[in-house]
Figure 1 (spheres, rainbow, N blue to C red):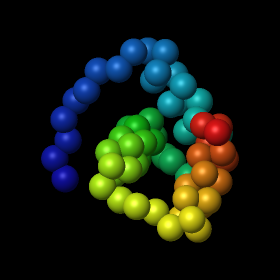
Figure 2 (figure 1 turned 90 degrees about the vertical axis):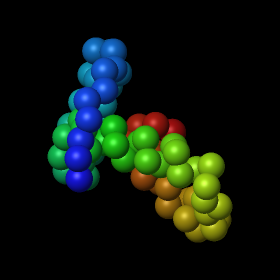
Figure 3 (figure 1 turned 30 degrees about the vertical axis):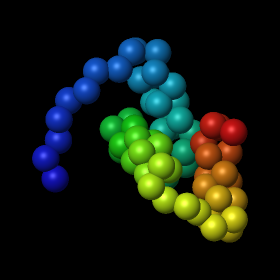
Length: 67
């Protein structure tokens, strides 16, 4: 898949970097985590999750420190 470059603040990059380190290997890089977060945010408008799927997403976000 082709990649393009985006610019984010150093502060946000460092938060992403910390989350990658704390993810226990779930994410291997800042880029992987950022792409995951962006895909999830953009797909929220299109998808309707079942209550079980929502709970699984919440658990994953909690484990990453977002909730």
